[in-house]
Image: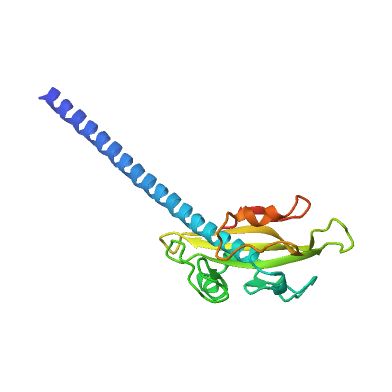
Length: 216
């Protein structure tokens, strides 16, 4: 009887240990599943923000010289959807979804006409972008090698979401865009890769994406 009692106690202890191990494993699997889901959500949000950033660059590079006040350095007349320096909040990534709806431009929609361009981002909240001209650097008009009149530098903020409202990514790009020269603006909607516009200029002219980072 005594041996049977000891065996029963040991069996119960072993059963309890197995139950604890099974419960711990189940909790770990749930946690891993949640982590994988969050990673997927974040990747989708960043992907949609990238779509918006590409839309902003395509719009900027498609503008004609006449749309920007010639040689202007501050408080300039700029193309539609381009803000002057200081007009945007210092940290748009912290602004609410309502602010982005009111101030951002939808990826896949012409900012000027509201025309649908045949593509949209995914996510529970459509991806949007805003662009701010940081500064304009004129080029000496007497320089015989000057291919353009100047170069504008821009901050592009793009916001995308995942399948949940809490899954949000905001990226910031710094772009350079030449103005006033013998070149062809990019087509809009874009037909060529993003780098096609900048191939018209030699290496002495700043053009394209100079920096990128994820702000949120």
